[in-house]
Structures are given as structure tokens and as C-alpha cells.
View: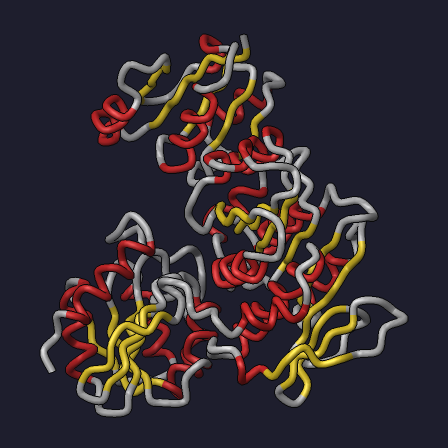
Length: 449
């Protein structure tokens, strides 16, 4: 009998428990420090043989064989450190899914662009000849589907630094490291530790595996030199040794040293705005090519892909104003990319919970692009101070999210874009960025012209 202790009763933890309860000779314990989850969790697992703990689990008393840590729970907590000191393996949900499955993997990480790249890569692989599952940090927990997939299937997985810091054997056939900018410093402590957590995505790769890396990002480019397999790069600025690049509006490809570069298609054929999305497109295309999709199939699929929910998602045109939901812009760099995607004057809604970032680097672009800024949430004082340091006067402050949308409408003029791209996490007011984005869409659709 193998005893699993799962810490964290959110989406990932519940999925791990669901899966492990189906296995023979397995005992499952689920612990969470939030008593507010107790009633719903007890109901969820009614009449199933699981031990539920509310509060701190006693590692010495429970003696688990394996501890599975949910991504939202920091490894620094006492029970995790006690387990490590006792020699008990501590793993993440993606590690568990990898151990329990047979399918091939395309893992995607980076500070920004993960969700779009993951969704696009899965779209490009659909219909090329093998089953495709898309999940991970993008939504569906990997453990919910991966163990049941056949070996010819491809798992396209968005992987956060939180999920990667506790891998062990995890070895994706292809991995993409999209970019690195400051984020989650409140958890990782510094940029170097954050970069290394993400670099774990390719640390177990061998000669037959592939790393797809950003040639224009100096940190990622240096980290890629450690790759154990082949490296294909993507670039907006230069022609890399192997990979993809943009040249005069065309997406160019060269995958083997003996190949001559050739054009895949025109960038204008793809309905995803912004230079950052050109990077995402190239990373997704390289992954699809690695897994055997033909260029003709990829080009057909590219022409039918549109923005994912909560990432530069068009919501509504009202009285000459375009409303766009970029709730997944949860750090300043993501918001910078969103601002750069538009040439029209912008009214932007900023604020939420700061993850240890400085907002100063964002202000010059705000000065260039924005007619007005609406501040809301826990971090609005931090953002206001950054705006004041640069003498940017055109901002207002909202006491609620509903008021923020109203103030944005009042500030916008015909021809403008109202953009929700908060540069912050949602956790001060919402359980996740999806709920924040859904409320924004609901409020916008209720506006009167």
C-alpha cells in the first residue's frame, strides 16, 4: 500500500486525489489550511475512501510515501520541509502525470505568452494524425487525462515555474522557453531563482529531444546552451542558427544545417495582433513541426486561430470604442506587450495584487500610448506612485471593479481602445484571472452606449 499526501485542495489537488483514488493499493490523504473549503470538499469526496485534514498535516504521524504539492502552495512551508528532511519525495502534479502516462509531451514555459502558445500549438496539432490533449496551467489538470492517453498522443502542457520547481523525472520530448521577465519574485526571491525554476523544463532532456528557445532574450539564450538535445530558436531580430524568424513580414524556417531558408507564410495571414504573438506563433509552429505536422496543415490551422480567452480578447465595440479583455496580463511585461499591440489611444485598467514587481518601467509606454489610466485593487497605490514619479497626470482611482469599468467608459473617446490588462495578479479581489476577465466582459456587455 502506497500512501500519498496531497497538500492543497484546489483544482490541481482535487484532480490528483481523484486519480489516485482509482488506483489499487493506494491510500490518499488530502490536506488544506483553508477551512472555508471543507464543506465543498467533503461533499465532493462523499463515500470515497479519502482522509481529509484541515490545518497543518503531521508528517511524522502520517508517514506518507510521496507528497504531492499543489502549485499554489509554496515549498517553504513547514510540512514540505519536514517531508524533505525525512527523505520523502515531494513532487508536483505534472510530475505525477508524467510518471503515470505514456504519451509524448510538448511542455511550454516562460513569463508571458504561455497560454496563447499552448492553445495555438494544440490547435496546430489537431487533425495531423495523433490525439492531442491541451492542459496544465492553462486549465485542465494534466493528471485528469494524461494517464489514459495512448503513447502516440501529444500532451501540450502550459507549465508555470510553480509546477516545474518540483519535477524529478519529467522529460518532455519538446520544450519551449518563451521569455523571461521579472514575475513571482515574492515566491522565488530573485530573478535568477525564477529563471532556473523555468529552466527545469529541459534539464532531463536527451539528444533526441528538442528545446525551442527565444533567440532575442539574452537570459533564455544563455540557459539554452545547457540543453541536452537539439535547440531550435525563434527570433524577431535576427536569423538564428536553426529555427524560425520574421523577415519583412514573412515567417521564415530553417530546421537543419543543410536546409535553405524558406518562407512558411505571411505574418499578415494570421489574426493575432502584436509582435509578442509573432514570437508565440513561431514557438508553436516549431513544436508542431517537431511532432510531425506538415507545413500545409500548419498553415491551414494558423489561418483559423484567434485569441484565447482573457488574452487580448475582443469583447465589444460600443459608441466607436473597442473593449478588450487582457485579464491574463498579470505582470508589467505582459501589459507592456498588450499596449504595444495597438496603435489607437488606450484607456487602460490597471491594478490587483502586486507580485513583487516595479511598475516604473511600464510608465514611459503608458505616457506614449494611454489617454487615461484607471487604477483599482490592492496595488493601486504602488502604481499611482510610479505614475507620479513620471508626472503622468491622467489617471483616476476606483473603489471597486465595477467603478473601474465605468470610469474607463467615461474617459474613452470614439476611436479608443479600453483595455483591461492589469499588470497584477487577481487574488486581491478574485480567485483567478478568469473570474476577473469574465466580470469585465459581463460589465462591458451591460454598458449603455
